[in-house]
Image 1 (cartoon, rainbow, N blue to C red):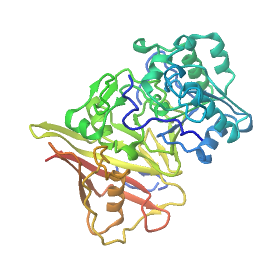
Image 2 (cartoon, helix red, strand yellow):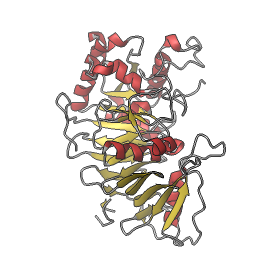
Image 3 (tube, helix red, strand yellow):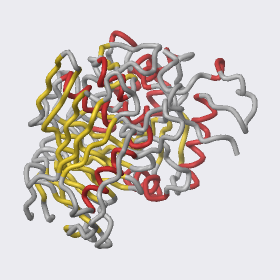
Image 4 (cartoon, rainbow, N blue to C red):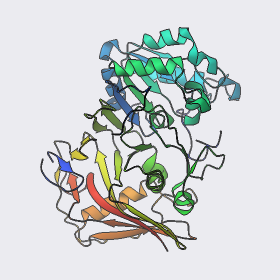
Length: 430
């Protein structure tokens, strides 16, 4: 079988408690611009790397689209078109909009959808985004799935590029969402759900060192964003994807601080952020899958820039795992029913971590490095703080993790922390 369609790290953007409050453990929106509806449907956003056998996530999308009557429209305009794929004629190796669209349509059918169809849009057929025939196809669907690739291609095909206005197809999808449809996506297909300041590229170290800039750059390490955003389906926080695998916690914190956002949903691979009633004051979130979603809270964060470099203090890291729930309006977490507060039993110190953001420059780097340090600190009673560093220097950045009075960890086996709530994070150059 050909490789699962999806971007690599360096090529993705080079082409163009009952309730536990995040402000303290205890039992338990931005305005929508004119022209944007307040949707009544739901979102299922995956941080990339969605495995073919993830019945939990595919099943959730299909259930929300009508179960046995679900009709899924697959949109893969973030992929290269057939004209740019040297393997377009090889069904085992091809990776283009049409090939990937057929691939996902087949997956949805195998997972139980009554029908799944590729919506024929890509950067070679931009005019089709205003085709009445394609709009009719959209209107026959009960759910939509946006595939991965380069989210900037979605801007080009569905938002008229720099005009940033809805095509007829996107307007039809908005209307379907408003009336109860599900909109799902993975990687770039999740990122494009963003409101203003959608990330368009960058690595954590370069972002911390150099800051962010509006635009879209050929240099994939440069932290960049699109001020007008994506489709605006989810506006209660920034969105980032592939977070743990590619160590993007640093870039997410820097971009949020630079653009004055107080929250980031940092999605991990093969795991979904399920959003009910997005864009309303009853927006409610559930996490589904084997990894998690980090909620980065910058409400109390402070930044400073000196000759030594940029620093941040007072941010908080909450890591939600399978079936945890989150209220976007109140910032409250409800851990899954099988989880309970964890009492640390280990007396082992936290191991030194010289590559907290899983640098692509480190041949021996490992994914989920940031999460590993946070969970190891949560599991020990030997210390309340731990410091990890960046692989790169000039300057090197230290990340300090702290268990303050607001912090809590939750476990389903009594030993290993799964869910973390309100760990304090600081970043400083040295």
